[in-house]
Image (cartoon, rainbow, N blue to C red; front, side):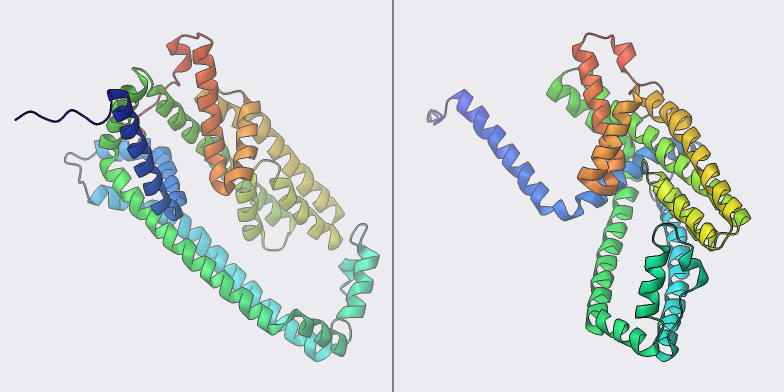
Length: 365
């Protein structure tokens, strides 16, 4: 029996197949778009920690497909949960102190502390506002009443809902991370083969460049930022800044974002200045500026630019533009995109593959 002739020409059939494939990809992306940030975080964590995971895997005579991925995932989970838990406990204590302070204001009022008048530029205005608003019991009661108990309850519910949503995404990221650890070698091999089939031999260098960028960014931003937080936390404790551990942790997080750390150690210096400790305030600010200068001009360019052969200007643009476009994820996505673009530019300019290929790249997992 003869087969009927095809309804579409070969060119139209190819276009229909491509259109169907793109449609399915877009549909799948729309279905999982709410979980894409969690998936991206899982990939970033897997890529950044893959060399350590491979070393642990090689030390076992018979690597387990369940035990080792579970232990690695649990270790990373605790790495995030322990600092967050400590910060949450500290915030809970501060919130309890604030509630007691509000209750005292309602009952007795509160005169402006002496340090308010010493604030630069705004000291006189702040003292006048405080005395008019909070000094007398009836003024404090009126001010707190204007805050609106219903609004505070509503804000609390919104915060609780946002916290629950992020907890679900964090759990999903850990689940995805487990499977990335378990099947990382297979996935890396598939990525390389698909890239070579779609874009030609050697195109997997783009994936290698992304891998190098993520690892360089983790080293240059996260590890260096945590180091800055530890050093400045010690400085806060020596200088007598209130809550040095909490402020040190905030400094470490802020130091991962360019130009954000001075806001924290500048605030710490202002607290010391308000307490009348001028020398300590100058010392904390000067030490913070020195640590930031060394980190941003010597250590980070070597770690990030050295791993990706990317000029630091493009690293900086990738970080700032990535944060503006994608939030915290942009810290890693932005430099990775810039690294790929520079790689393609150098490839088009005719540089040799040896000059283009980042050194020391392992499978990304």
